[in-house]
Length: 115
Length: 114
Image (cartoon, rainbow over all chains, first blue to last red; front, side, top):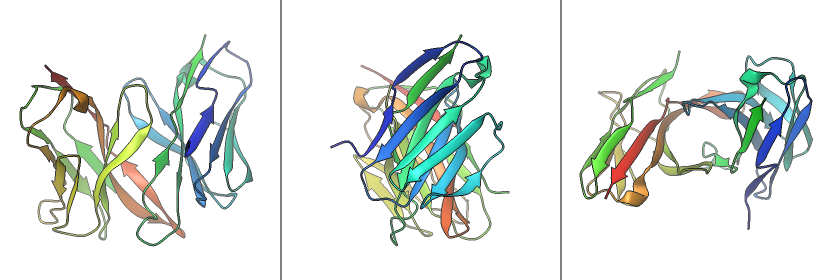
């Protein structure tokens, strides 16, 4: 049973293209996140959604747009891809239950390479 | 603001050696503290956590104690294995509206040689 899944796992594309990454969680969690991990493994929060509402929107270019069609899905659309967007993108989710609220569950990552 | 500082890697040890990865934090209030592990090619997963001062989190032979007086949460293991090779992230939680946000350290890569 996959708890947090992402597609695709690998994405190689040309500069200037538009691409989407999909994330789904079957844990019944209320909150979902997108992170970017660079080549030095530094992890940066990009967005957080709570019950389909945006609650964290860190300073990322507006070429990045998250979309949450329902509580179980948080997709990331990227317009006009740039070389610096090459990274691993992780989706995560967390419950709102007391005692568990701060634990995040991560997907396997999407490795994006922009040429 | 709130922050987490981890020792810089990579940390290279021989199998069965004792491991310490240092983590110190700066925070207002009383955050919960976490260690996450990222094995090669995978996402992060929670290793252990502690929610208040003097709590000890433990899992898979790893331990970390929440030390308020030194604002530290060092990760230790008595005898490491090759399979422990991974990147380890220290994190703390801060309230954000009705939820929490995790503040992450930079990660420490651990390499265990047979």
